[in-house]
Image (cartoon, rainbow, N blue to C red; front, top):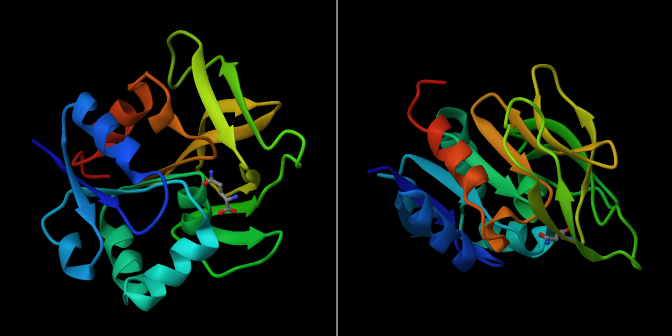
Length: 192
Ligand code: GLN
C-alpha cells in the first residue's frame, strides 16, 4: 500500500488523514525532515500559509520539502497550493516554487470568505458534480505550460495538475467524496 505523508505543522491535516485512509492508502504525519524518507508522496493541507511557512522554516523543512517535491508527487490544498506555487501575491511571500502557477491569496473577498459550491468536472476528471468547499481561498491567476485543469469555478482553474503535482484552491478533504484523493493516489508511483 502507498504511504502518503501529510504535512502536519498547522491547519487541516486531520481531515486529509481520514480521506487518505478512505481512498485506500496509509497516511503518515510529517513534522520533521527525516519523516519524508519512506513516503511515496506528500499532501500539504489548507491552513494559513504564512504560519505554515514560518513553522517549516523553524523546523528546517523548506529545502527538504523542495528536494522531496523534485522527485515525488505533492498534493497541495488551499494554503498548500500557495506553498507550492512559483509566485504568490496579496501579499507576496516565499514559497516552495514547485508548481508553475501564480496565486493571489484571499482572492474572493471578505463577504464570500467561505462557501460550498457544486462544480461540473472537466472531461479529464469526469463523473458527476463535485462539492467544493472554499475557505479564504486563493485564486490561480496564471497557469504554466502543460498545466491540466480538472475543475473550474467561475472560469478560474481550481483543481490543476502540473507535472507530478496537483493543487486545489478548495478543501477536497472536507467533502464526503474521495475522487480527488484517488486522482492523486493514481498519479503516485506511475513514474511521472
Ligand atoms: N487564506 C489562507 C492563506 O493565505 C489559505 C486558506 C486556507 O487554506 N483555507 O494561507
